[in-house]
Length: 485
Image 1 (cartoon, rainbow, N blue to C red):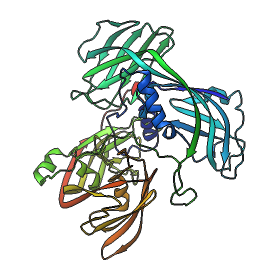
Image 2: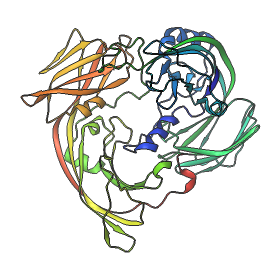
Image 3: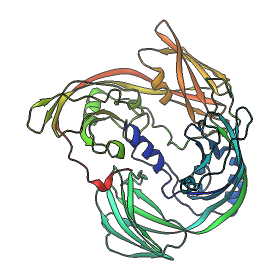
Image 4: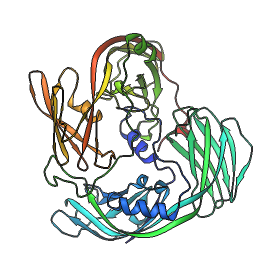
C-alpha cells in the first residue's frame, strides 16, 4: 500500500483543527522552522539521531482508518519533506493485523500534509503500532525571494521561479509564482519583529508552472518570503509508528520512543502591577474564521504578552446584547468557550455569542484575577524539592504535591508545566489530573510522552484583581474569501 504525503503549510493543519472545533485563543505565530540551506551529511546525521521519534500512530480507528503523523520539524527542512509510504501492517493491541487495502473512493484521500491514512478491517480494535517503509525526500537547497509589504507589482527572480507580489493588505497577501515544476513553493509571512505568522487561510488558482495565491493571517504582515526547493536528499526508512501511551490507563505505562513538541519555548514570567495590567489588557469584538461556525460574533479579552497570562482567571458577567433595532435580545452563550491558552502569542479569553442573528452591540463586565508575579520552579530526580513543593519522578509520570489551591488548578497546570528529557529537548505534555486536596493544597500527576529528566512549573503569586466594563459594536462580518475550510 503506497501513500504519498507532503506539506505546503506545515503549521496550518493544527490551526484548522482548532478553528473547526472551538476558538479558545488565537496563536498568531508559527514555530515551524523556516527553510534553510543544509547538506546530505547534516540531514543523515539528524535522521540517525531522531529516527525513533519521527512517526506516530493515532490511538483510534473508530472511523475506519487511523493516521500516522510525521514530526518532520526535528530534521533540517523536514517540515517540507516529500514522503511516499508503503505500509505492511497495522497491528492491534490483540496482535492482529487490521490493515486493509483502501477502496477506490478512499484512495482519493490517502494523505494530507504530513499525515498518512491507513484503513482498517476492524473499527473496534485498538491500534498498537504500524510498520512499513517510507521514501523520504528532504530539500537541502532553495531558491528564495522576499518582499516588504509595500513592494507590489515588482517581479523578482530566483531561477527557476519568478514571483510578483500583487497585493498586500494588513492581514492578507496575493501573489503570482511562475516557473514552478513538480515541487511546491513555501511561503513564509513575517511581522515587523521578524516572527513567522501562522497562515489562517489560503486559496488560489493553481495551474501548471504558475500559482496565483491568497494567504491571510491574524497579525499585520510586514515581510513576505517565497522559497522553492532546488534539490533533495533521498533515503528510504523502515517505519515503526507507535501510538500515544495510555499512561493514566496503564495500558502502555512507558512510551517506547519519546515524542517532542514543536511549540515555542515558554515566555518568561514577569512582575506587573495593576497599572500595567490595565494598560495592556484589551477587550475586542471579532468574528470566527472557522468554516463550521464562520462569522460567529465573539468578545475576546487580550491579556499581556507574558507567561503570567496563562494562569489568569477571567469571568464575564452582566452580559447584554442588542439587536439591529437597538433592543436587548437574549443570546445563548457558548458555555465554556472562554479559556486562556498558556504561552499563546496572543493570550485570549473568548466569550462566543452562540447566535448568528444580526447583533449590533455587546455590553457587560469582565472580572480578571491576574498573577502579579510568575516565577519558574525547577525539579529533577536529584533535586525534587522547591520550598513546600515536591516532585516525584516515576517514568513518564511526575507527581507534584504541595500546590496552593488558591493559586493553581490542575487544568492550568497542564499548560504551565514543561518537561525535558536528558538531552534537554521538550517532551510532549499528555495532560495532568488532580488526585486529592489536603490543607488547601492539592496533588497532581502530570504525564509526558517520554521520560522527563527535568520538570519546570510556573508559579503564580501576588494576585491582582481588575474589573473592566465593555460596550462594543459587534465586529463586521468577514468576507467569504478568508474562511478557513
